[in-house]
Length: 154
Image (cartoon, rainbow, N blue to C red):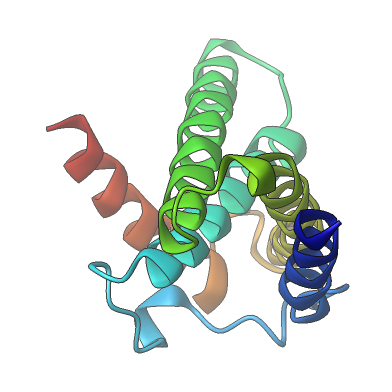
């Protein structure tokens, strides 16, 4: 019973912060004072990157070989960052196996919510400049997540 109550409280606490964020409420990751050695901050950055890449996969049309490759890379990075977010969140909470499903579900819900904000921003960018990646939020977070993905490869 204590485990279920803890999981519910954890789920509520994590979800409460990001229910239906708009792109205007999201600040570029580079402007946040985050410590990548802190597992909670690492989990947040990874879920933001996962959401960004999920949005790229969703928004970029599948129209030619170049965009097909871009979409495949985005899909793969979305999965990698989802896993990193989950592992970091579990580590931050003492690797409690009983909370694993609750943490995974909460992270998934947060990624969906944030991805909707990124997608809206990308679509707005495209209408304004015919580029999905213009605009401070998307361009800055694309650079930040790109640098992190390069470090993950090493």
